[in-house]
Length: 632
Ligand code: MSP
Picture: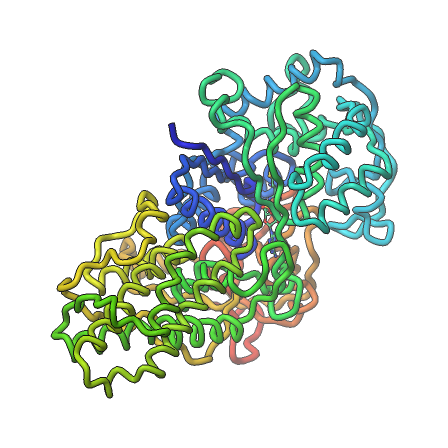
């Protein structure tokens, strides 16, 4: 039977659209999964979405949808992105699925049956407008971190998990299993956190409804982290599919970002200890991306949309960049410049050129067919390149340590060696037929093997190389160790020189969520008459004041002067504009729209803006037109 390898990404919150941080973990997991499959493992690569909780409930309310409709819509964005980025997940879990609700309820009951859940009172800082509790640490200068209002101490009935009981056990586990938390620095952080004392954990809330109820007491909703973490067990067949559970659990690795390490390295294992379920083998915590030196945030408008990056640079260069530029585990900085540099040097100059030079020479000197290998003629140069064969033996070691950047570094060593070999051997000057044939064979074979190793990082590029060399397609089923042996490319194979792998990219416009991608063609929309259009009462409005709607990231409350009256308009532009930027701006207001209530306030109109689901910019005027003037 094949060995099992179970790896997971975090399940992503649906109150956010996918960004570079989500793409990072998922691409890394994809690379690992593909390598493992090629190394003969049967993988369970799990990703998914975290759909319950107060924030999702609120976001749905703001967009005027039920939480289920809202989550269905956002989940699609994640799935579409994974398709675009060539992510080969084996299972996609949503916490709103029945199988998951069952698993969470069951785990809760198991822990309760062991005497580790009790009812008590949860006391913390509460922000009334935001309807949220915050800990001391979460407060910003003693105020609500979301709306900056004063908070008060409040008590709420809650179920508690006896986490304190497991302090000794979890510490002992971490100390006797050095690989349980990686990298090392993160392991030390967690050890000191546990040593400072574990408190019992509140695992239910009564302040919202969107979630899984506590069995037998549905006034309480199970804490979102208890719910979310259990997804890893759900996908492994818990609680009913014993056979699957036996082969899949424990998970080999949970890959996560450093901000959610404590949940995975302390909360999760203590739940499992209580339920008598084996612990995952490893939790690997990666670093965070900043954007051009700045923290990524919606208010700064610098959130990097992976779709826009791949639109400009391509899928494989993006996947390559994410794992090449920064050691997995450390923080990194994303910038257009860094991306272009990697693209032009590593991909276009090194890899792209190696392929194109090799193919050109085979075309020119050997009529487009791979020449035979004449081993007796091997020189030092060829011997160096042939050692690419041994590389397959070090891959698993690198993978176990999550050294993606070194793995790529190893591959590039051979790419650079081959490029240098061409310069040194100067085949265009070679007079002896056998020497030239041998050299061209060695180059082609080196490229074949390099493509094989590159496949998990850059699946389509690897296959373009194989296609050009007249070879069969690489898939996750291609056995890496076997196919990585030297000498498998058959002489006389016809090559086909296609287009350049990576055309050079010149520096130009910035990538940010403010740079929309123009559609290829306008979609066909239903025609309306001029009378239909005239029904819409559009007018010039002058923004008098603007403030954020408490508890909402998106909504801004505006007072707009329409010449003869002033109206209150709630606009979903809070992720694009800060309120201070708006007073004095002239905008286009739809004046005869039915008033609508949002977050308990009435909106008496709508502003025209560019963009789809995210606002790219408000429509304004070049001239200072009087408020109330008709727009047509
Ligand atoms: N839903 C929880 C996870 C539950 S897992 C049982 C969650 N979701 S999240 O959508 O907010 O974040 C998911 C992942 O994205 C985290 O691992 C986080 O570290 C990662 N990132 C968010 N911003 C990031 C960067 N700027 N850079 C790298 N990763 C980042 O947390």
